[in-house]
Image (cartoon, rainbow, N blue to C red; front, side):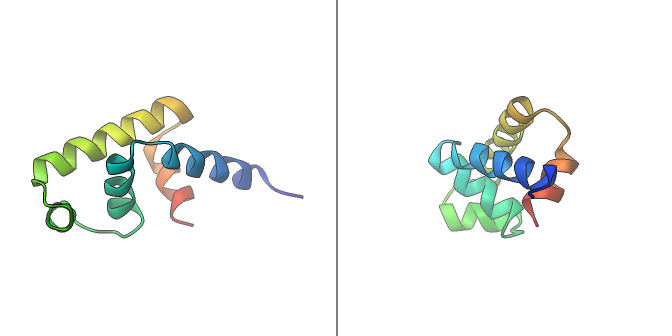
Length: 79
């Protein structure tokens, strides 16, 4: 049987995949690829401030949709 963690993890991934394309790419680069804002900016040809803005918007949207706190989100998504 699948645990609650598996269910929640699938919900998290589904919500991430539903983000706008560029926002999703930036979020994944920061969270999954563990890139710095500077590295992400260089990869996508945007400023560090733009990276931060898009990342925080993604995080805010995910927290609103999923409830709970960001640490839980990071713990689940990185596994």
